[in-house]
Image (cartoon, rainbow, N blue to C red):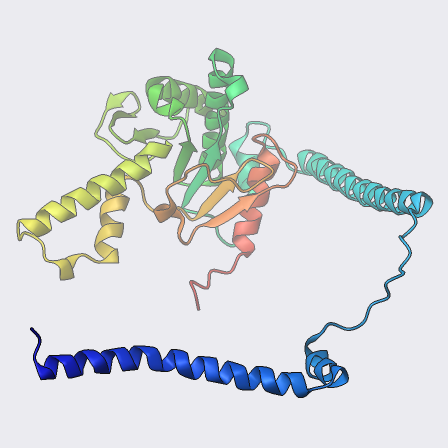
Length: 329
C-alpha cells in the first residue's frame, strides 16, 4: 500500500499532465469566440496579406507560332554556319602562311648535308643551347619496320644538325621506348648519318639510355639518361625508396633531404636539365616527359607542323637566342 508521500507525488504528476490540456481547450474556446465575432470582411482582411496576387481567371491559351519558331531556328543555324566558316578560313590562311614560311626558310636556309652551312645559319645567334632535347613519336599506324626506320632516320638527322651547330648534348624522348629496344641499331644509324655529313672527320658519338648498355663508337660503357616514359617515373620511385630506407636506418636525416640533393641524384641517374625542348608537332604534348628535368627549360613548337624539319630546328634556335631567362625574377 503506497504511503502518503507517494500518493501526493502521483496526484501531482496527474495534475501536471492534465493542466496543459485544460489550458489548451480554454484558449481554443476563447479563439473561436473571438473569430465568431469578426465579420467576413474583417476575416478577409486578416488573410489578404498572405494570399498571392490576383491573377486573371479567364486567360486565353497561347497560340503556337510555328513561323516565328522556324525563323529563330534558321537564324541560329545561320550564325553557327557563319562562325564555322570564319574559323575554317582562319585555319586555312594560318596553314597556308606557315607552309609559305617553311618554303621560304627552305630556300634561304638549307644545310645540304654540309656542317659549314649549318654553322653559317646560326653564326648570328648570341647563344645556343648546351643541352637540347626533342620529343619524337612513333605513331600507332606507323609501328613496324617502316615506322622504326623513319624514327631512327629522324634521330640521326637531328643528331647531325646538333653536331653541325656545336650543340654538345642531345636527348631524345620517345614515349614507347622503341629507341631503347634498338640502341645498337640507333648507334649505327646515327654514325652513318654523321659520316654522310662530316666525311672522314666524324665527331665522337656517345649514346646512353637508362638500364641499358651504352655505346661510344661501338664500345660498351655504363648506364645513363632517359628516353622513355617509364624511365622518369621509375627513377623517382627508386630514389624515394632509397631515401626512405636510408632515413629509417639513420644513415640520412630528414633535414639532409633537399631539392639540391634530389636534383643531383636525378641528374646523375637520368640526365641533366636541358636548355631547350623542341616539339616537332602542331601542339604542345609532353607525352609523359619527366617534369623534373624541364622545370626551367625553354619549350618551342611550330603550329601546323607534323614532321621533323630543319626549318623548325633553326627557328627553335633563333627563338632560344632571343628568349629572356628571368628564373622567377
